[in-house]
Image (cartoon, rainbow, N blue to C red; front, side, top):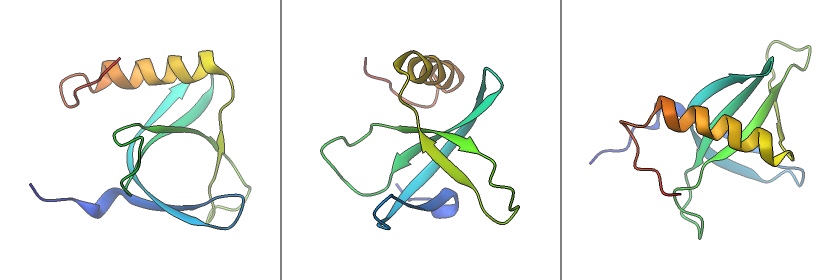
Length: 93
Protein backbone atom coordinates (compact mmCIF):
# COMPACT_ATOMS: atom_id res chain seq x y z
CA UNK A 1 0.00 0.00 0.00
CA UNK A 2 1.38 3.38 -0.96
CA UNK A 3 0.48 6.69 0.60
CA UNK A 4 -0.68 9.45 -1.70
CA UNK A 5 0.34 12.81 -0.24
CA UNK A 6 -1.26 14.95 -2.97
CA UNK A 7 -4.14 15.89 -0.66
CA UNK A 8 -2.08 16.88 2.40
CA UNK A 9 -2.73 20.29 3.94
CA UNK A 10 -0.99 21.92 6.88
CA UNK A 11 -3.04 23.88 9.39
CA UNK A 12 -1.89 26.05 12.28
CA UNK A 13 -3.76 25.81 15.56
CA UNK A 14 -4.41 28.66 18.01
CA UNK A 15 -0.93 28.07 19.52
CA UNK A 16 0.82 28.32 16.16
CA UNK A 17 1.52 24.57 16.09
CA UNK A 18 1.42 22.95 12.65
CA UNK A 19 -0.55 19.77 11.99
CA UNK A 20 -0.83 17.81 8.76
CA UNK A 21 -4.14 16.48 7.51
CA UNK A 22 -5.30 14.55 4.48
CA UNK A 23 -8.12 16.42 2.77
CA UNK A 24 -10.97 13.97 2.19
CA UNK A 25 -13.89 16.10 1.03
CA UNK A 26 -15.72 19.42 1.05
CA UNK A 27 -19.37 19.13 2.13
CA UNK A 28 -22.03 21.80 1.62
CA UNK A 29 -24.62 21.92 4.41
CA UNK A 30 -27.16 24.65 5.18
CA UNK A 31 -25.42 27.31 3.03
CA UNK A 32 -22.04 26.62 4.68
CA UNK A 33 -19.04 24.54 3.56
CA UNK A 34 -17.26 22.03 5.77
CA UNK A 35 -13.98 20.23 5.18
CA UNK A 36 -13.49 16.63 6.19
CA UNK A 37 -9.89 15.99 7.23
CA UNK A 38 -7.98 12.95 8.44
CA UNK A 39 -4.98 13.61 10.72
CA UNK A 40 -1.75 12.32 9.17
CA UNK A 41 0.03 11.69 12.48
CA UNK A 42 -0.81 8.55 14.38
CA UNK A 43 -2.76 9.23 17.55
CA UNK A 44 -5.10 7.61 20.03
CA UNK A 45 -7.98 8.66 17.78
CA UNK A 46 -6.54 6.98 14.66
CA UNK A 47 -9.09 6.89 11.89
CA UNK A 48 -11.26 9.67 13.31
CA UNK A 49 -11.95 12.53 10.95
CA UNK A 50 -11.90 16.22 11.80
CA UNK A 51 -14.74 18.42 10.54
CA UNK A 52 -14.06 22.15 10.25
CA UNK A 53 -16.17 24.96 8.81
CA UNK A 54 -14.64 26.87 5.90
CA UNK A 55 -14.71 30.65 6.29
CA UNK A 56 -13.86 33.33 3.77
CA UNK A 57 -11.03 35.65 4.86
CA UNK A 58 -11.31 38.26 2.14
CA UNK A 59 -7.81 37.30 0.99
CA UNK A 60 -7.92 34.88 -1.94
CA UNK A 61 -4.46 33.51 -1.00
CA UNK A 62 -5.62 32.52 2.48
CA UNK A 63 -8.27 30.15 3.81
CA UNK A 64 -9.64 29.87 7.32
CA UNK A 65 -11.19 26.86 9.05
CA UNK A 66 -12.96 26.97 12.41
CA UNK A 67 -14.12 24.25 14.75
CA UNK A 68 -17.80 23.35 14.87
CA UNK A 69 -19.40 23.21 18.31
CA UNK A 70 -22.93 22.22 17.29
CA UNK A 71 -23.16 18.45 17.67
CA UNK A 72 -26.20 18.24 15.37
CA UNK A 73 -24.31 20.04 12.59
CA UNK A 74 -21.28 17.78 13.03
CA UNK A 75 -23.43 14.67 12.82
CA UNK A 76 -25.37 15.95 9.79
CA UNK A 77 -22.14 16.74 7.90
CA UNK A 78 -20.56 13.42 8.93
CA UNK A 79 -23.66 11.51 7.80
CA UNK A 80 -23.50 13.19 4.38
CA UNK A 81 -19.82 12.22 4.19
CA UNK A 82 -20.55 8.62 5.26
CA UNK A 83 -23.30 8.26 2.67
CA UNK A 84 -21.12 9.73 -0.08
CA UNK A 85 -18.14 7.46 0.72
CA UNK A 86 -19.88 4.32 2.01
CA UNK A 87 -18.18 2.20 -0.64
CA UNK A 88 -14.69 3.60 -0.01
CA UNK A 89 -14.37 3.56 3.80
CA UNK A 90 -15.32 1.15 6.57
CA UNK A 91 -17.21 3.29 9.07
CA UNK A 92 -17.51 2.22 12.70
CA UNK A 93 -20.42 3.64 14.68
